[in-house]
Image 1 (cartoon, rainbow, N blue to C red):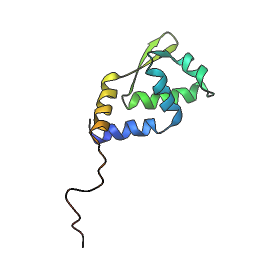
Image 2 (cartoon, one colour):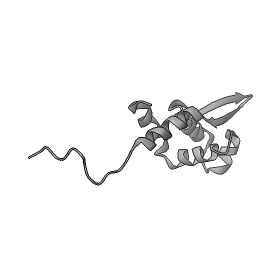
Image 3 (tube, helix red, strand yellow):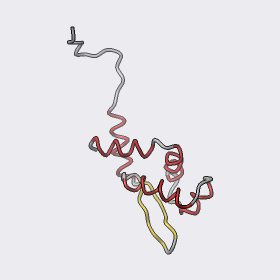
Image 4 (cartoon, rainbow, N blue to C red):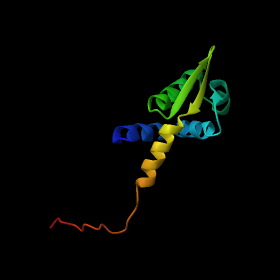
Length: 100
């Protein structure tokens, strides 16, 4: 996963509503109507949030009649998880400081 993809996902998850939507989708596919029931937002606002999640690749959409059904894109989620797992926190820098 390249840095641009990671940044887009981080931007998408930086909103608490979108983060909660992703948590809901981790339980399986959800219709937009079910997502709207959970949040006190309008349908256009939900569409905005879902567009951002779809554009970053984290969520897939399936249209059925007038309704949209959303699922997590497991391949993207696993790649993002692998990137996050590759990060580490060290107290000391092995290379030392080279500035004056």
